[in-house]
Image 1 (tube, rainbow, N blue to C red):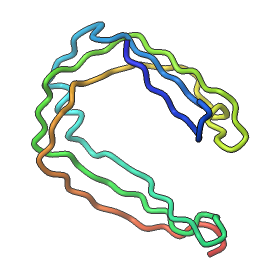
Image 2: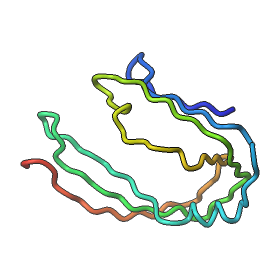
Image 3: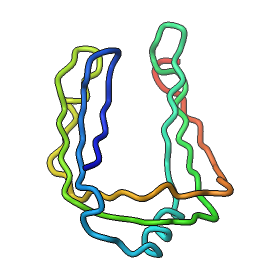
Image 4: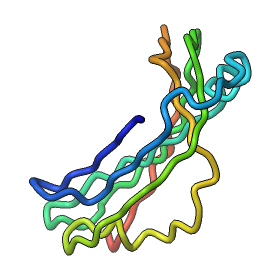
Length: 120
């Protein structure tokens, strides 16, 4: 079983589990999906802690070698926390859980868009 955890300081706020190597996936299909566009939201705060700059970054992984890919049953547990409210996320269902052995990427290309947030 694979276990992932998210801690806020010393307090656990999320735990996920997935069956390890439960069912093999097509490596070429996984590589094709991994080479598609990926997105990352970067938030740069103002001096008072409010969001000042939100940057949506689009990037592509290239030259990926997938050594193995699997799917399996998965579960997610979210614990309430006043300062890390991940338990309030509207998660209705876990559609699929997939894992890959460490893919290697020789290069990453990125494109970003900058958006101003708040009363700036």
